[in-house]
Amino acid sequence: MDLIYHIGRYCQLLLRVFSKPEKFSIYWTQFVKEIDKIGIGSMGLVALMSVFIGAVIALQTASAIDSPLVPSYAVGFTTRQSIILEFSPTMLSLILAGKIGSNIASEIGTMRVTEQIDALEIMGVNSAAFLMLPKILAGVFIFPFMIMISMGLGITGGWFICDATGVVSSSDFIYGLQLDFKPFHVTYAIIKSVIFAFIITSVSSYHGFYAKGSAIEVGKSSTSAVVYSSVLILILNYILTQLLLF
Image (cartoon, rainbow, N blue to C red; front, side):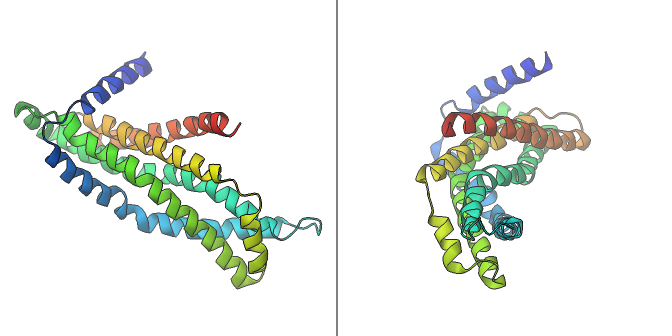
């Protein structure tokens, strides 16, 4: 029953969030700020994770190829498929759910327990839309760019480490990257990133918006936001893969 209650309350909150804004200029300013906070503020982590994961995938694939029947360009092919199909859109979203989701939940939750949200509502402001809409739109807008940058950096990291260590020649790696490339796989990754961005921002905002009590409860709401966002990402990852790739 608690699950049904939370789903219903979440849907009701989204109806408030996507109601007509009172003043577009204020929302635009907040939207730009959230892009900087969610996207630009996370690029260092995205770049670091992507480069090293790409390098590790390439090295592990190269070390696993023992048979002379398996061509060396399979390293480039495997690195490309792993980065585009799973790491950049899904694993990176799970990591960002911890960073961005907890930040959003704690920020809105702190405003709730310090009665700042109550003050907004007394002034006639749609507090749900004012606090949540810029975050959701900014996340949906900036996530695909972050994922595409992650793809490029991950593949570049794999190519660099293979070329630097000599385990696979640069020409073989690049040939593997080009082999049987399907542009729809990139589209598939972008579709997933948009949906995951919506889940992370909206679910985290929901938990922060309905936080109550003390700072301890704000911490619990942040933890719940990360857990529920991660679970939903894993479930939707399976559903989207089944729908889009088969």
